Image (cartoon, rainbow, N blue to C red; front, side, top):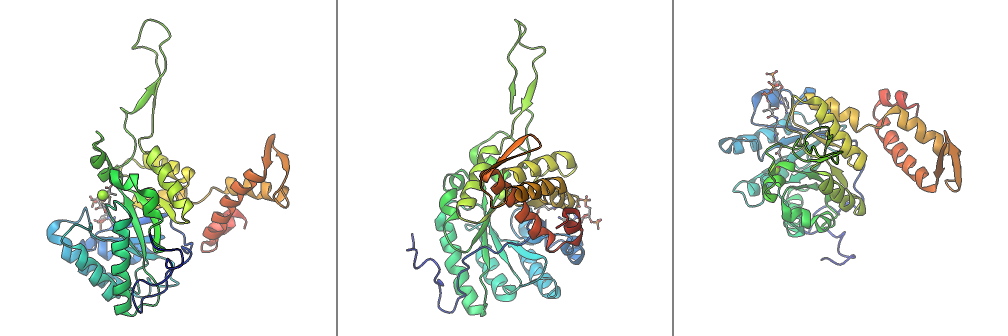
Length: 354
Ligand SMILES: CC(C)(COP(=O)(O)OP(=O)(O)OC[C@H]1O[C@@H](n2cnc3c(N)ncnc32)[C@H](O)[C@@H]1OP(=O)(O)O)[C@@H](O)C(=O)NCCC(=O)NCCSC(=O)C[C@](C)(O)C(=O)O
Ligand SMILES: [Mg+2]
């Protein structure tokens, strides 16, 4: 563990000073694309205009023989769209590099930071198992940033997708000032835990509770309620992120056709404290945008409570409900997010009347 005084010192001579606060930027969806897929690559300028975060994926879902093409494709895309990405631009550019035990990750990091480090906002690191993985990436990035002459840090985002990672999530979140956030990786996590679901995120009809029987018949008339397989992990991830002032995200929802259940899963994550989710297909972009932007009704209610509460202390009655210091803080959370999103979106600003 580094001393508190050393925590914000650069880890390499000439590297940028570590960030003290993760800058808030709209982060409702992290849109994944494969930079080796020509069709997807051609859509980058269009998609970049619609999403908060565009992520060039180099890890799982990219075929082994395409690993180098994906890395090189991302370099070319970042250079060819230099006006879209980099400091002060609306859309963040991220990448997901290969896992730290893979034969590709070293070249992923060296090539991307050296060639387009000034365009990259965040590097997503998969299968993070503990703070040691973040420390390794932290030092290596500092060396590469210094060599590339970068004047701002590239932040790091961890995917929570192994049992060991979940057990160490608080240490991962606190491992470095470079940490930007954490996403749930339900597919690898399910495999690592030996869960018996083969779905990529979402629920499972077999994970349920059943009403008590009313008579001798155990089979008829007993309503079942499907439960959320991911509740424990998301809640734990949200706490680890909140206590370290970094951002939690739900990950992928693999049933692309089921846009209704996708919206439900995203909303559960939003209500629990996540700021965004991944979109794997263009159809999921608007779902994430809708779900992770507070509703105008919630914003109107929050405004009423904050106005009625004056300096934020005491208790008042609004529409038959008690509001006090704590519920006022809940409303401020909602309003802060609404203001931050509305600042870059005139349509939302009008809907929120902010
Ligand atoms: C699911 C797939 C195969 C269906 O791809 P498709 O071509 O069969 O779908 P489509 O509906 O026919 O596509 C319609 C059009 O949209 C395009 N398109 C389609 N998707 C995208 C996209 N993402 N970005 C930009 N464009 C896209 C596609 O190229 C096509 O273009 P066209 O009209 O010109 O023919 C495809 O959407 C895809 O490959 N998506 C990304 C998958 C991915 O990145 N997976 C990894 C993240 S999840 C994960 O890793 C797990 C985790 C966290 O690690 C863990 O839980 O452990
Ligand atoms: Mg994974």
